[in-house]
Image 1 (cartoon, rainbow, N blue to C red):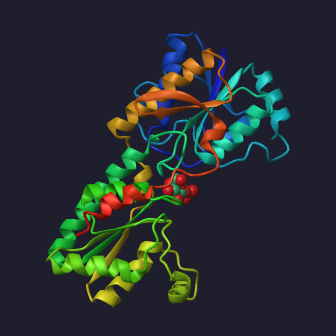
Image 2: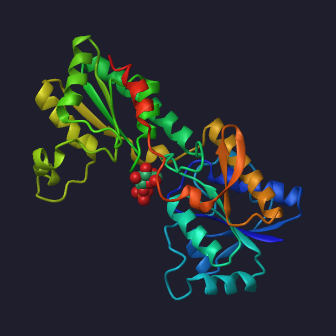
Image 3: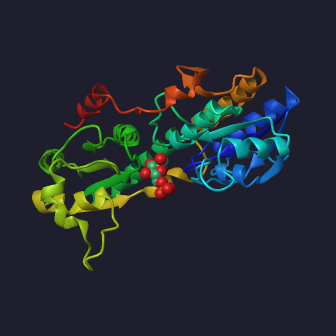
Length: 342
Ligand code: F6P
């Protein structure tokens, strides 16, 4: 059996560990053959394949990024896209099925191709941890560790200057990274998309920490919107040259906190640092296990599903379970963290 593997969407620490897990199990236990597909679905429609053997995956579990490359190409777009064309391309290269490693968009495309009769198996990935079908996704733990380390560092410089430090972390739609890193680093305020907060709520937490002699530490998800922001902060949409402002929500919050509380405040946007570099031990193990189980699922002919973590087990779930509603932070998880704000 010959299987193509692709990584699609934003990259994420642990992608290479999945690839290694699939190839090692597939070649040693099942005598499968693999091809790497370059740059996600782009490589499928362009037939951009290369042989993937044990040799190519040697030592990969600790390597960040993806050796396959990635893109946000939609396989249904373009003259060579669509299920029928892709089916012909795969048949021409004697490829029996595809393992697609990606987030919501990738899995939605995989689901559609599977419904159109192609052999596709999914492996969920997202540093944001926003997919419902899996308890945790690999990449998340690494991102939390990086954000925690950054906030520990912000705290010592904040302490030295008696400043309020604002850390903006990733999380387009959900606040998992902010919640976990904020708890781990002992933030005095955690601002996430799921929980409405006004600038006064945040300043209150900042002032209380300051009054206790602490240098306030605030963590904010990039997707957080301040209650009342559209009216009160509409002027913040432009920079000094009247161009659309490039900074994120952290850059909006810091000057407002400083203006309202009188406490000198600095913002740091962590950005793609959270997605780069070596995966944590937890993510290496999770990603490798997903890869091993993906090889098993293929041998069983269990196409049209994705492998996922439930408790401590890897299970197979229909694509539909991963799509639609996002895995948001439940209120009780936020309240646990909020009990520590003081
Ligand atoms: O979905 C993962 C993620 O890292 C988000 O947290 C972030 O908003 C987005 O991707 C960034 O995407 P890009 O790398 O395309 O700028």
